[in-house]
Amino acid sequence: MIASRLASVFVVLVTLSATAQVRLLCPEANFSIAAPAGWTWEAAPASQRWSVVGPRGDRFTVHIVPSASQKVPEIWIRGMLPGIARDAATRGERIEHVMHASASAPVFPSIRYAYTRVAKNGQRTFVDGYVAARGQTYAIEYTSVSREFLPEFWSFVRSFQVLDKFASQRTARASQAAVTPAAVARKASDVLGRPLGPNQVGGCSPCAQ
Image (cartoon, rainbow, N blue to C red; front, side, top):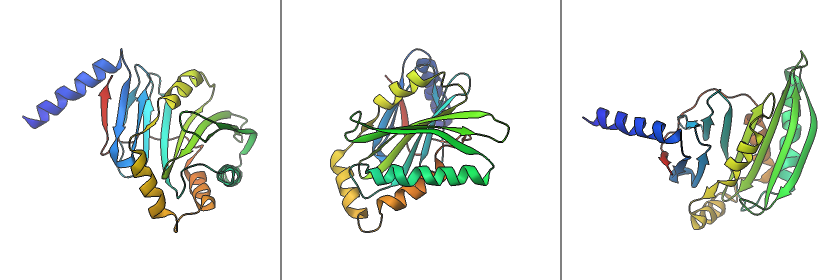
């Protein structure tokens, strides 16, 4: 009986997502964000990473990295990008056309960034991202070969919301002594800018809107 009810809910969500956005509510990570119409959420265990996938396999991903700050300092981006360049070099790749700029929405302050990853064979992969901090660092990223869905990606970013601002302040105070911006940047460079496999939405609930 329980299994049949769960299956019914899943079918309703997939049907609705074809005509409406499906917002992921994730209290355990203190955020929500809305998938583009027709895109679906995939599930993931305790990886602190959530992905929404388009009809042709394009993917937008939310990464969470522990942070001691309520805002993203410039040291974050300066620490992350060299780490990505080192990772690319170990694979015989290189990073080009790096840019980053301050942003005021959906979280103030925050940072937009972009760069191109060039493989050994000359294949170019474009990485576009957004990062904000509210007790922990939220990095939202789109990796593609054409940037075809860049408008949808920025609409996805604009839908991001912190669920409990007071909880984010408590989280920041609790982790302040243990986590530095430089350490956060190094950890972020380990996971950002790489193609990702399917994941799961563990503990979070998609709901149609």
